Length: 206
Image (cartoon, rainbow, N blue to C red; front, top):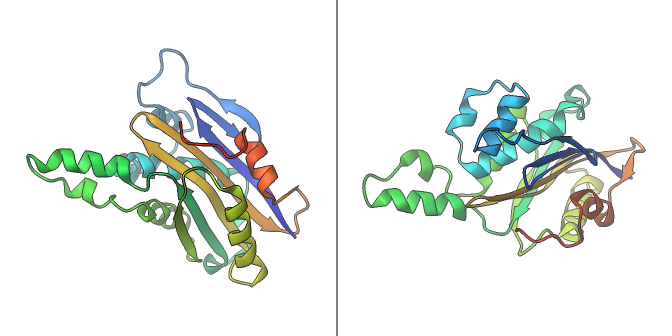
């Protein structure tokens, strides 16, 4: 049986890990919430500053999800899958890239005009080499994610999976990542439990 062994939710200037609020920025904190999270937790990964906003959000959520969770020694790189989703693909970066076309197009932004580049950033950081997929839904479809990930794991295509929702558009952002593993007897891996940790049923990007 599959279980949710860790979770990380980032939304509305708040960070939740395993269902508990673990950090909010001080009122006079950095205007860039994602940078303030990176600095608060003392991460050291210079490439972070070169990522687009979607990449930064996904990278931070994965870093926090896995920091007290996955024991990489228990898995081969090929055993760990990544399955993510959102509503607007890379539209936030597409807008930013289009704005540069009037002057000199930015190759640094163009690199990120596909949402699965975010998965690439996570996989590079953690050396994951298993299956990965990115899906577009109007809202977080926990039922689909449950069915897709369960199929991967029950058919031997993965032994662990990072899955969930990572969405950025303008100043609005939401991330909900879950670590799914087998036989650890924690929280059962169900759509209901994912939605409960996310804080609402059928959550829409806001």
